[in-house]
Amino acid sequence: MKLSDNGILRCGEMMAYYDISECYILRPNAMKIWNIMRTYFDAVLEKAEVDENYFPLFVSASVLEKEKDHVQGCMGYKSCKWIKSHRDLPLELNQWNNVVRWESREFLWQEGHTAHATEEEADKEVLEVLDHYRHLYEEYLVVPVVKGMKSENEKFAGARYTTSVEAFIPETGRGIQGATSHCLGTKFAKMFDIEFTNKEGKNELVWQKEKNLETFVLAHEIMTHGDDKGLVNPPKVAPIQVIVIPVPFKDADTKEISKACSAVKDALREAGIRAKEDLSDNYSPKWKYSHWEIKGVPLRIEIGPRDLAKKQVRTVRRDNGVKADVPRVGLVEHVKELLGKIQQNMFDVAKQKRDDACVVVKTWDEFVEALGQKKLILAPWSDEEEVEMDVKRRTKDEVGAAKTLCSPFDQPEIPEGTLCFASGKLAKKWTYWGKSY
Image (cartoon, rainbow, N blue to C red; front, top):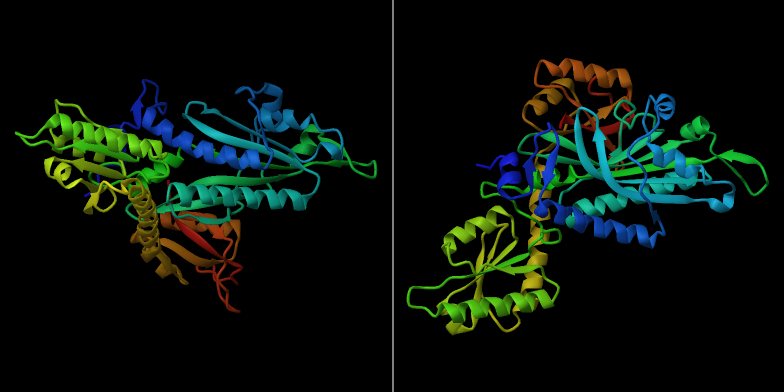
């Protein structure tokens, strides 16, 4: 059994409903995770000497008319107006802001725009950024993803091409598009007359790139790791990494136990570990265990009278429930090591689940059967838009509409003569398919 994802969000104090549809309040637990990710990505941007800006949410009607096929926003075209010569390139800007999809939803996101002198520079930047997104997903959120290219039908409207990191939720059998990195080519440069003078004194159009990460990433983490007890936060992004709880008996010296809990908490915090103690006296230890499990705290430390006498503590892992008695001497280093093991184990478990749900098919019948079994499907494809749309139409009434998720950069070999599973034409690439959110 697994607690519903909405239930986890509410009980884990990640979000609260608002009185406007598709607008939500992000509570401190959610914002802390988002800000930890932001801190990582800001460090990446700082190292790359990318400047931070803030641009208005609104764009003019004239710009909307020009960008009716793809609303790039004012950041993309306004910033590029600052470019005059090759000495102004590359121009790399970033902002963290809220976005409104009118009459749909509001969310927070990270938005970056760059302008380059050449196609090669833009292409290189697209892939470098995508790898940073992969690192964020796999090393921080421990959500396994596939890096790949979106199909022409699924790419960002107006982009030359779109790359993405794709996650998959085995329990629901659905893929989730993660962060994206787009090459916009010179389309918008032509639209807004964004030129630069090259080294030879001739005018050229800039090559643009856009990258995005939004707060839906929090849902990826919750759907990947949540269980029937609530949230399961990876240590790297957990707002609280360790909760210390006193477990007094009737005749025990509660004051000494509480003092020991505070000492452990202080030692952990001094070492840079996000630790907290729960010394409230109006709830039982069992209630506290459940409360902090719902919130997804990776590690619980219990201290009772026996632990006090033996100069030890009891650790309880959130990811697998394993308990251990650990000496107070060397506890800080032990906790650091244990948090690292929890982080790695969570990724290994999630990746194994994802890999177990992935199947390779080569025929239409195999495809439909796998789709009905909620699988992530890798299939040879002719890379034609009409075939992709036909697959969506044919599967809609049978087992639910399927779509391309991405064509992985790490392409398996396609033996000569391999046919597309859907059209029977020669296959050009391997592509992941499935239902999606």
